[in-house]
Image (cartoon, rainbow, N blue to C red):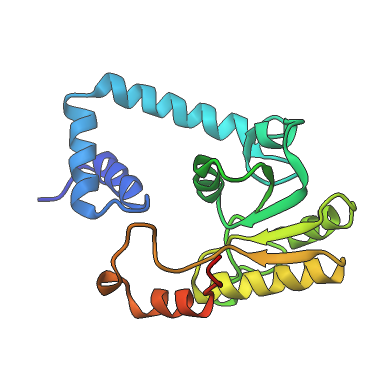
Length: 199
């Protein structure tokens, strides 16, 4: 059965979101239009408001309302450390760990020439200007453990070294509480390569 055009468009829009397959998109569309019209209206208004008011922080490129995000606006952060991540979700993951009090720079992606994502799209010129301000002492590379993430980390580490800064990479390997027999070979190889002496 073919859906009415407006419904088909809603299903396609929901399906475009990460992690939502065609059946889930259809189920969500049906639920919103069948039982949850009030929630659908609220969702629509929240989306419109967010699209109109949320932009990027002028310092770190995190999602923000206004010029600076709350993290950049805070005076209690450590200006000497700059953690470079791929996405706003990565900022939230690091923040939720409670183990980091420095500043961030959000690339909004990783280098991917085949997809047309190069240094300009990642804001590497803005990052270079930030590194030149002479406040940062350590650049912490927290990009994903993918080929593109590693290539991006390499480029950023070269930028940091060009400014005479220390570039470090977050540790990668066996997760806390993980059992070796369930860890994939690539993760285990990273863990073995990054081993440390026992104190």
